[in-house]
Length: 256
Image (spheres, rainbow, N blue to C red):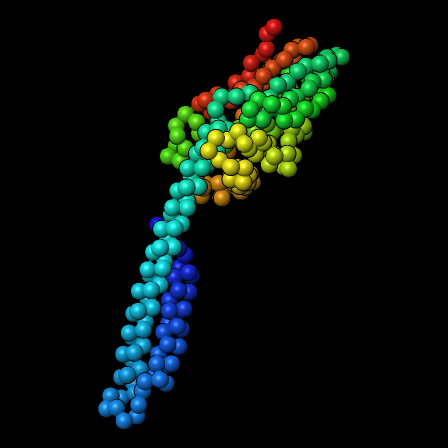
């Protein structure tokens, strides 16, 4: 059952008494006759008491069914979120870094390719970065083990690329906010068991969890951390970042 704030309970009680009072007044106008031996006060009191009791029963029954409906709805949303996260957290390539030029020891040029769920390129970018070693940072979202099946409980998305000569704060963002929304919902038709509208809704949930820590904790997100992988640059080298089935990230240099 869902927790309800005290203000909502007080509001329901107030509504109950107001409706009971209105009903009692109407009943008094329609049924009370001066010649009856029972006093007006006793009649009104017992009528009001009866109507309060009946209205409270009706409100409690309605509230009970309302909570059942919400509990079922939350459970169904949880099942859909588990499908969504399981798709996002399965082993797949997240990014590729290609070192295209190293004019001197002061900086290097690289191309960064970001991949969607099915391994298709989502975005290509080119950078000129001071330094001899690159760092590529990912935001990793860890869900509670009781919330998501163990072994497929993390989501990761590319965040910033920087180097040994420029800090994270001065690095280059890999996705804008709008691109992140599209990235999380890219190729929604490939999410087994979910329609595109549900996937879009769940991606908005992930996006809001990233931006709002309190909201995230209330909705099963254990923590949100940064994970920066790094490697020394070599001309024409290609590095791939994979998200493992266990949720971990690995950086692998491609060999030909």
